[in-house]
Amino acid sequence: MPESNVSAVPNEAKLRWIHPKNVVLSKSSMPPTLTNFYCDVSPRGKLQLTGEDRVRFLNGQVTNDVKALASGRGCYATFTNGKGKIRADAVILNLANALWVDLEPGCDVKMAAELEKFLIADDVHIQNLTEAWRAYTLVGPMAADILREAGLCVSPPTQYFEVAYLMSSELGDGFLYRSHRARTDSFDIRVEQLQSSALIGRLSATLKKHGGDFMDANALEIARIEAGIPRFGAEMDENTIPPEAGLESLAISYTKGCYLGQEVIARIKSVGHVNRTLVRLKLPPEAKTGDSLIFNEREVGKLGSAVVSSSFGPIGLAIIRREAETPGTKLSLPQGEAIVTQDFS
Image 1 (cartoon, rainbow, N blue to C red):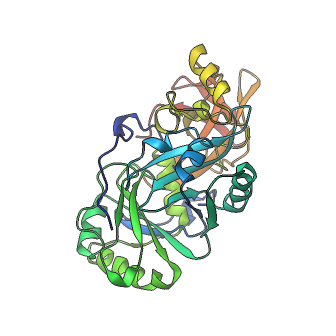
Image 2 (image 1 turned 90 degrees about the horizontal axis):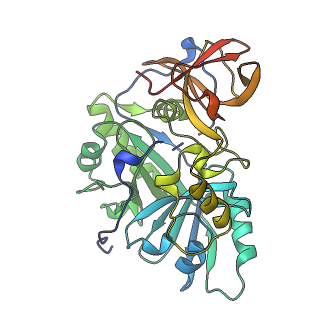
C-alpha cells in the first residue's frame, strides 16, 4: 500500500470531545476496569466512495475540507441540512483509491440514499460495506505497543485520523486509523468479514499478555463520556448545530468551498456564539437519558447520556442553554441534582 503523505490534521489540544448504544448502568452492572481493551463496533456504518469525482463530490456535502486530505489521512466532519443542523457525523478517510465514510450505527442506509440524490453527472460510485466489513476499537495507553506486538502495524499512526494498512497478508486489505474515542489512546481497525477471526486471535492473545481483554460496547460508551465526547444519537441529534456540540475546531473548515448549511454555520461564527453548549455533568444515581434538566424553574436541556464510571461515579453529558453552563451550576433532575463540571476528576 502507498505510504501516506503529511497533511494538516487537527491540533490534539483542540479536541474537546467521539462514540455504541447508550445505556444507563447501576454500580452492580459496571464492567470491570481494564487499562487496555478492545470492542466490537461492527454495527458502525461503512460507506466507500470511488470514481474520479469522489473527492470533489463529498467535499461539497460535509463541513470539513476533504480536498485537503493527502492519501492516508482523514478528518472528522458532519453532514448538515440547509438550516445548518446535523444529519449525521462521520470520520472520512482518504484511502489509496477510495474515500471511506465511517458513520454511527444505523446511519449508513440513510446517508447512502441521501448522497445518491445529489449525484447528477458525477463519476462517483457509493457502496455500502457495513455488512461486508467488521470494525473494532482498541483502547488503552499500550494500544500502539499492542498493535506492534500483535504484528498488525510496525508504526501505528501518531496523528488523529491517520491511516495505516495492516501488515499481515492473512488480514487482506484491512487497515486502521488513530481515532478519538477516549481520554487515552484509541485505534479503529477495519477488516473484511472473512479476516475478522485472524484479527481477533492476534488482538486477544496480545492483550491478555498485558492484562487486557475484550469488552462490550458499555466500556467504550463509558470511555467516551469520561472524555467528554458527544455522540450523534445521544447528545447530538438532527436539531443540533455543530458549534453547539463544541465541534468547531475538529469538524468545520471556514475556508473551504460551499456545502449544504454553510451560510448558517458561517453566520454563527460571525455572531460569535450559539445559545446552547455541551457540558459534563456529575449525576445523581439512576439518572436517565432524556430527563429534563431544570435551572431557575426552566428547562435548559435534556440529559444526553448517563453512565456509572468506576473512576468518577455517575456522570453524563448534555447540550444545555448557556445560562447554565458555568462549572458548579446545579441543575434539577427527577432523581436529584446534577452539577456542571469543567472536567471529571
